[in-house]
Image 1: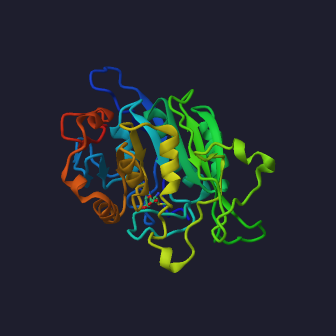
Image 2: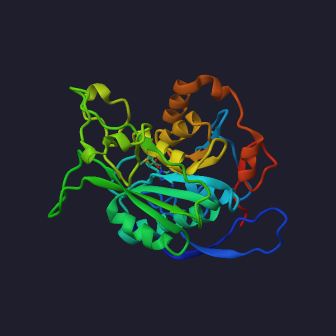
Image 3: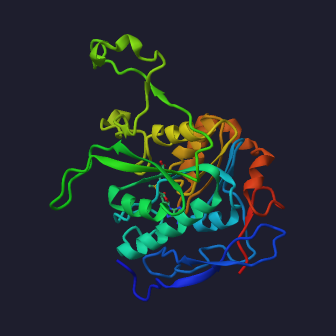
Length: 335
Ligand SMILES: C[S@@+](CC[C@H](N)C(=O)[O-])C[C@H]1O[C@@H](n2cnc3c(N)ncnc32)[C@H](O)[C@@H]1O
């Protein structure tokens, strides 16, 4: 529900400038509605003009900010990121536990908000860079239509997701979409292979491959656009993730497909930090933000590699930011 007095008008918000450029262009952005009360519905998103934001966490590979993703986007340079993995709120009325996210917006306002960060995603990608968006099919086709004039469509990956429930007079929803777009021709495309599936009881192959078993690549089967092994664990003893966290294999595959070691991965919706762990474990650099509680991300990274949290990311990561005067902090765009 839209809050009373909420604004859904278009505002002129300055486009971030590279240092040294003189032309001050403006682009139309829609305002991000953020709180149920409407109190934070401001084109300023949080950071005031000229204000610095200190990172919440720095590691040997990445940097995390506790802020609105639009503040982070506007601090990033055009063409600065190799891959973006985004798993936004789905507008299903979820409580993200910190009161800053209104996850039940009027459809038009939700789409306006999403188009704002999708537009920014397209801007900050390097030529040939990749954008993955994990989202309900209901929103995915709208996102894909919006992105079509900005990026090149690669795949609609069906990510099997059992344990959901049909709503109203609908079919049983069994997959989420993982949209995969690139900025022009992909600069990196790594083939990911999966082990040949075997029966967990007898150890024999599950399929017979029509007599062509011997021709299969011993390194495994090519990953397809239909991911069946991604459902969350149902059994309590295997449940280690909180409710919003993705199985790490989902961002991990996106990263493996589209990046090489040393590349920069951005996730604007940190949640429990699965993308940052996947990136760091694969020796990719990462940049992230989370509007709510960032402590689960810190715990996750410390649990994975505590030493990395006492180190600083390499200086190359600074080049992703428009203002590199300060040590991986960023400045909000001045108005
Ligand atoms: C679905 S969860 C992401 C889960 C994450 N992919 C993982 O596996 O842990 C979406 C997250 O986005 C955060 N969020 C919502 N709006 C935001 C905004 N404007 N800026 C930054 N984070 C936001 C929410 O607090 C929530 O933690």
